[in-house]
Length: 336
Image (cartoon, rainbow, N blue to C red; front, side, top):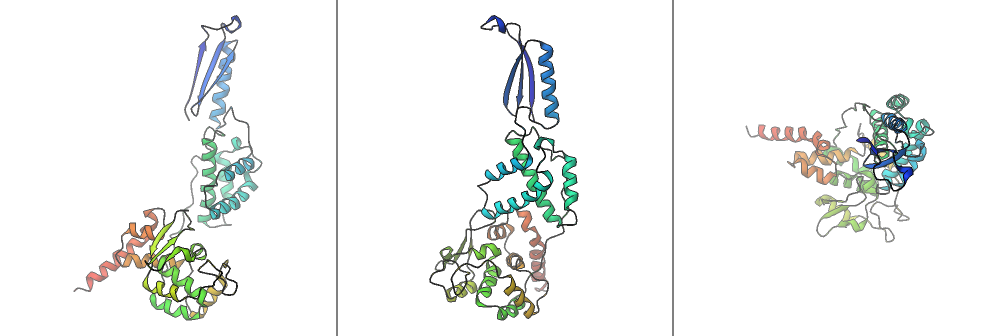
């Protein structure tokens, strides 16, 4: 963070008592701060104090704040995030407060963050540990931007190596084997996931108004990123949606058949169906992987897959590239 300090001897003071005084001027994060002294020595001592504070990562002109109090400010200023993301941040900050809560924000150093990492090891997965660290990094960046810190203590902190993502794909034969064991609601949810790549949360929040059955599109509004996306309706899925019994009082596609109210989850019904069908090592989220893999095997480029799945970056869809390449190679070999 840039900081410049200079001393200026008064030359044109309006009153006699200002003549000969020394003024120290510092610039921190683009803001200038001035202080006048009778002696040059006092001005220099003030300069040394400012430099010492900034070396420690402390903003010398901000009121000290504890981590837990800053965390509240961080949450209050995160209204732009989706409700789900905000709730997740709030839950993780609750755990962060157990370790950092009563500490002054300016007293936290890289060593303390490394100690915090040790408290997580063995309790949660590497991916979850990284989520905590990413949130902590984001909070310190904001503290720096808002003037509570001169620089973030999140320097040299490494993240955990995560295992490769799951690549389980549901074969068409497995899908046909699974559907007879599902009740109508779970059956439709599975087909939506398989033919649109929607996340479970997106499926549970899908409304009839989001469907354009005439033109064949689904508009997914309740997304993880907060940005809506549109996916063309597969003919099989379009037919299922047209024939699905709609509750007169429900605006949700996936709803309780009796009350019409949206359902929180169908984990138990899903688990029973998968077990009865004899399908192993398969999670509901794998339907999303199946959708992306089928797109890749059909020859869709990564940008198309990214657009339909709503992944943030092309790197996140790169796992399907080898599936596409293998499929094309197989197709070429059949020409012999």
